[in-house]
Length: 320
Image (cartoon, rainbow, N blue to C red):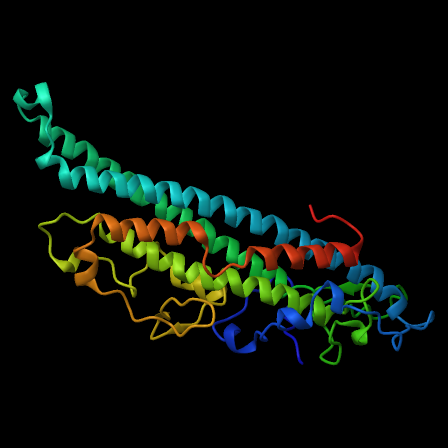
């Protein structure tokens, strides 16, 4: 199985989806399935003797970034869910305000109008905060992709310098940056670390697409009941300036200049959002949106924990 060799500091282009290898099935790369391959034993006089410490440092750095970035995602997702809940509450309160019994406040002139204006302001405020949290999630996935594609360690062209040095950039096309497939620590090669990283990144990439679906749906309920469907957000609209470039850098497939439709793990992409359905959103539908956001359908939390444990056990160090 070939593996990607993007240099550190670069970002995959739109063809990332094609070059990114399918992760190994969970049953093929677990704690119990890892064993040392004794066939690889770098010679003490070989540059591989010096490659391994450099590769170990790089692997530790990249997996530490992955761990921290995963936590950034969790934080952004939690904030996004809070903003989405507040947005839905403001929308429903505004929607049902004309039918509420205001008691002694009923005789106060313009009370309902003032309340609706306040709720409308809150809707707009939480709408912006929701997009901000979504943008943070996009950045998190970009960083995950970057770290997962920066695990190789290349021999640095040193000219007349006798000191052996290594780089995160490929200087020699014949240098794969994987040390010839030897274990970096005790059991896992660079390719194995990349497989684990790709599996983890794919979960978050698919969940990001689903989150985008929910953000668009929740943004659209911000429209007034008397407005037409022209003001409803479409899947082909950017939620913020430069979003589609960020999504392409995150490895999300782009088709006809905008991202392909969201999908659940193992399923085909869904159809684009139906504007008529969005305009008729009711309380139960909004509840489903919020619940879907909360549960992270595409992320297998137990598998994420297992992957991080495998890496920590291999490195004999905790990821920080």
